[in-house]
Image 1 (cartoon, one colour):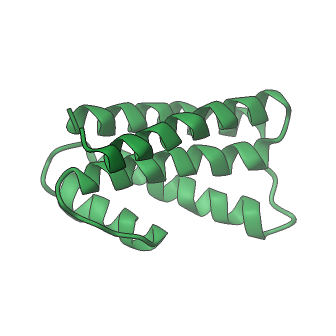
Image 2: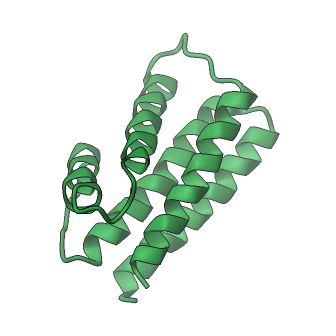
Length: 124
């Protein structure tokens, strides 16, 4: 595995751990963001493994849908996981009245872990 791809997976793993710590500390909005960033880095890694470089959040999500999901490499639900997490991250970061709760974060974190592992397997 190339060093850039490894670094993205290291970031993904770190963001998953951060999300768990934030969730257990009751910082649910922050936990949503960290779970999303884990997925973002995993998606970036799997795209890089196929020679596809994207930088912005929207372009990574779009390329993941186009080159990974439409190609049949993963189920469509994984694209739904990352796009919904992205939307919730934006709400939690930018809308002060947004509320997140533990059950929601548990679901997002569970999906993020699954997403990262599926992407990792695609890179082996």
